[in-house]
Structures are given as structure tokens and as C-alpha cells.
Image (cartoon, rainbow, N blue to C red; front, side):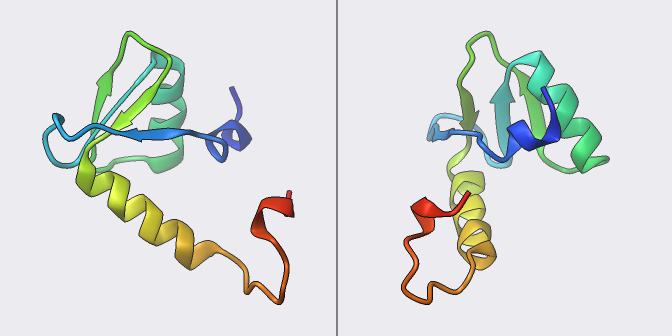
Length: 81
């Protein structure tokens, strides 16, 4: 798994998780730890391939994602790759 794989994560919101928590398989946790360094996010080992995040992280990611989006200029963002 490369860091470019992290750009394609399908985060799934899990309202049962405590705030500031992400659950993912070990290979992804290793990559996240390398990419993020020391963080206050609770990184937990999951047994399924899905990446689950607490509601607050899910919302924060979408706010960040919107800030990263290029100006539309009439371009459909789904066509950018």
C-alpha cells in the first residue's frame, strides 16, 4: 500500500465509535502512522477491510475535503483524476 492509496479511502461513519477514533486494518494503520506522525487521533486495529471513523472525524474529513477541492470552473470534480 502506498500513500497514493490513502487518497482513495472510503471512510464509513460509525456513530458507535468514541470521538476522534479511526478503525482500520493493520497495513493502513501503519501507512497512516507514517503519514500523520504523532497524532491525537485514536487509531484502532480493525478486523474488517472497511475504514470506520467516528462521526466527528467523518465530518471533519468532509470539511477538509471541500476546502481541498479545486474551483469548479464548470468542471465536474468526478472527472478529475
